[in-house]
Length: 267
Image 1 (cartoon, helix red, strand yellow):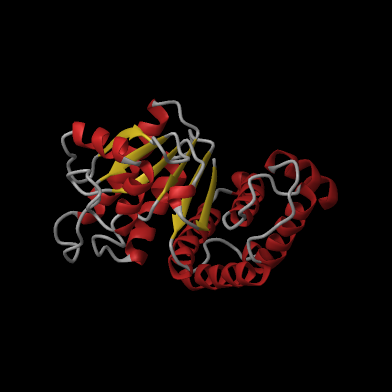
Image 2 (cartoon, one colour):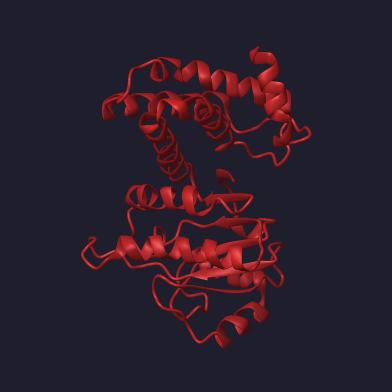
């Protein structure tokens, strides 16, 4: 599964389904993104949502996308943040799990999430990212691609760093026999986190993967287990790499060609 954290307007996303941070009524009253999705989808989308007769917190329901570029909309009702005292994290995680499950059941391959509950229901972004990124990375594997569409740079950095930490912690915990293939997978996944192109040039992408491996070489060469300070420092270096390289890259034949290019030039 390819996971990306990108800036953009989710109402323009050409995914199989977009995941909306919805109100329990499902009628477009949860916040600006919810409202925008209903406006872009048209009255038919709102009518379809009305026929669903609402949705409980932590649950999700799906409609067609109607006038949206996405074929479907998954409406996930996230929790209102009240200080973490009312099971908000479990309900937020449930939203992401249920949305992925609905997509899988419908035989969808590519979905795009909004940041559920953070903008409309006061859920702290960093807490949300730390809770849901592991869910996306593990439960989302049956899908081909998942995007998390962010409204501003701070949000993108927050979710990106959570994904970077996920991979670094996995590398830190990996058994020796698993480490080599996991390193290759992690390097490609870390690079792809911020690549906007659907079909990046494999040679340019392979160069970024090699550069990411160079950046993380001091971390990879450390003996296990590494300390949390070592992991945080490595995450800082990866985030700096994103800032320096940006998200633009030449168009090419796509991700399927990166491994031959990467492996050939590594030899």
